[in-house]
Length: 459
Image 1 (tube, rainbow, N blue to C red):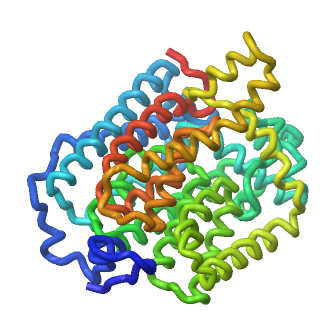
Image 2: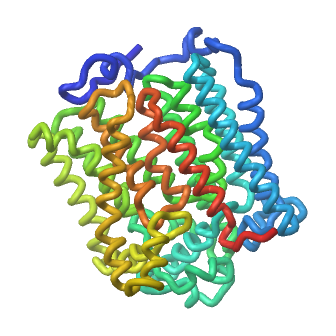
């Protein structure tokens, strides 16, 4: 058993458990401590397989408007796909809750088996048509724009005028890229391979995303104190498999860099390690700027303890990485974010404020109120989650980052279910907490609301 040092000042149960790296599974982990929750496992498998079926039966109301040739079945009708997707999401949610409950009562499935099951599911979902969101078409379009030598932060998908633009959701055809340079690099690489074959570009993006998801799961399973819990919460999480792998979302890359930085922070506490941690956090921000919350959450304990010897190298490396990423593309790459920041999604508490802006107060006033209020609500929610029962001691960086990311998921005016990808891996590195079920509930609610493949709900 190889122990990974934790941050300065941590001790007790965290030092004995959090981020311990077993060399092998061992007989103790291979044998469940309690009976396998057969129904929960069956629901999880059924939910994922049902989603694979819907994705393969494209096009329908919950997939892109084109079929991936690798795994293709006759297309489903609109109402049929809707009822099936609701059944799939419900089965995934119920299965995950059941597995978490059993794990809390002592069930310890073999992590290798869970990871293997997740790998099979990821392979099937990556071979089928993207499901639940049309974002993959936008990724491909931005990649095509960059591949043609144009600027995806100024050029919009509608200007492509070809089959790439045809697949992009109408809501985003006139919107330049809101993703960072790292995301653009991945998208351009896929488009360079796919050329004018849009489905080939999308398949490259899907395959790369599935690979990153599995590598992230492998790191989590190897690094977490409770390897079975980590596998349930990420590698074999039926909800995330459908959202992140089935939808192919870039949030998977943010999770990957976050996990790498978090695990490295537990191993290396010298200035060289901090430089690498800062670079990883900079790369995460280079995918989506919302990853700045990870920088704050993971670094706040160092700031509180005035550990300038560690904080300064980390901050300098993060800023230098961001400069290297954004200088070549220009600061204007951040401009589309200002428009996106004014959006309000459903369901959201801010819809009431937005409604008041159309009936009682001016819309501009409502927008200003939302912009000022939601960060405060995020901090209050983070404080609430931080105070919930958990075995991780106060001041632990993972705990702080998890609470802040969760607070953002709750308070942000525009929040999609795949945005929780920044919270799930941090939760997997923590001991069991009451917030496990809250995160499942939030992700489920958002998934039911937004898993539509870019189409309106149709019955």
